[in-house]
Image (cartoon, rainbow, N blue to C red):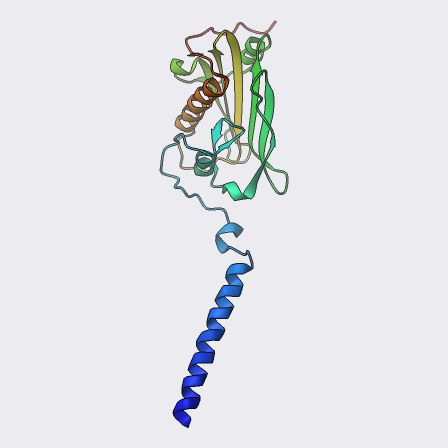
Length: 201
């Protein structure tokens, strides 16, 4: 009789643990979501992969640079198939992790002339890198390039940028991906050999 009671108790105990685990899984609480991780890894390089923020920036790349998981962000705005536009990736508190602006046409050259910083490789067009000096205000970079017969200026800012990464290399890769993506989306030939913007009057 004692053996039967012991067996029933063991069965009830196992069932109660299973139900508790199932309830925890269904509650939607994920301990990994409470604190953003740096996965897919702070030591890896930025690479092109889908899905994208604002059609131009890989979500995995932004995650790698900032340590902020994509499921913590939502997109506000968009980059249209024609002309310019602005787009953000924000947290639920309204903090902008990614800010991206695209200017196409007449104002692209004058806006590019307003930006000054360290020159990035000429393979990106006229591109500059603007470090902020701290992780809170983030890092900014921009590039002026041709997509078909239309001159385009793209401006990207990312916040925060943890220490330990090569931000210049990260943003060189981000601009390269964004320019190629724009050319693909608009079906135009990418030309990044100039021109250098004239100073604003």
